[in-house]
Amino acid sequence: MRLFAWLITHNSLPTNSVRMFRHLTSDSSCSRCNHLHETALHTLRDCPLSWAVWMASHFPNLANFFVTDVCDWFRLHATGPDGSLFVTTCWEIWKARNEEIFQSNRKPIWLIVNCISNSHNFLLQVLNIPNRAHITRQVTWIPPTAPCLKLNVDGSSFGNPGRAGFGGLIRNDIGEWMHGFSGSCGHASNLLAELYAILKGLQLAWGLGYRTINLESDSKSAIDLILEDDNNFHPHAIVLGQIRILRTRNWSLSFSHTLREGNECADWLAKYGAQSDVNIKLWTSPPPQIAHVLVADATGVLRQRPR
Image 1: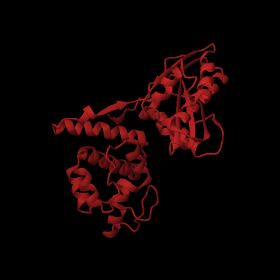
Image 2: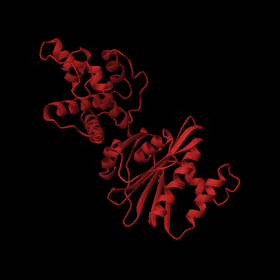
Image 3: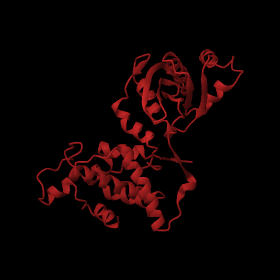
Image 4: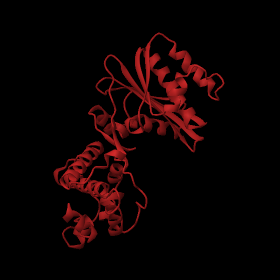
């Protein structure tokens, strides 16, 4: 890894641009996204596949992340408080790039993120560096116990208040997709969007005949409101009243709170709903954009979350 860092800071990482400069290839483009020039900065940061890794890994410090010179970018973050994690992430992105090019094996994003976590923990042990685990926690999607189904929901508002939407999905005890939904709720706050997500999710589950449901949301405020008895005078009393009626029906219904990292599929659906003009869209099969997240959830992949 030390040699890897040296190559980056000396503009010598063997990307296609460097190889073309050294007359080792006639094509400087990125083999993964077809960008015209595969530089080190493109490979490690700007390629859509690499950027997806940075986003999925929830790297804690993205300040000054778009410095244009690769040497400055690497030195700035490699010597920062999260330097070991930064270097490890770059290393795993580079390894995944090589595996795709030379072995025709494209690793899913969730697997790269998992490799980053394992490699970083190993590096800290080898170098005897105290782990900063006290400022992070690991989050994963927890499957329900059969015959219960899990209904994950989320709301999203661009502006709070602003253009808003909701979304959610129902999965079984092995993480299989049963049904999903998304939709727009016009101009609304985050809280109202979260409540709409809960309402629409419960309506869908009841309509499909499911009678044992654990609803999970990353909005503790919304769950607390629902579980309160006296909310008749709340600004969102109408939606809360509709949810209350659903709760009284003859089924086994429980509510639980999760963190955003354990609710990524519902988060994507909510953002999709907020950007659409459709009141509600039912998904009988999962959108391909979250296929890797579904696999990660089903296999228990851990995500890092700053405390």
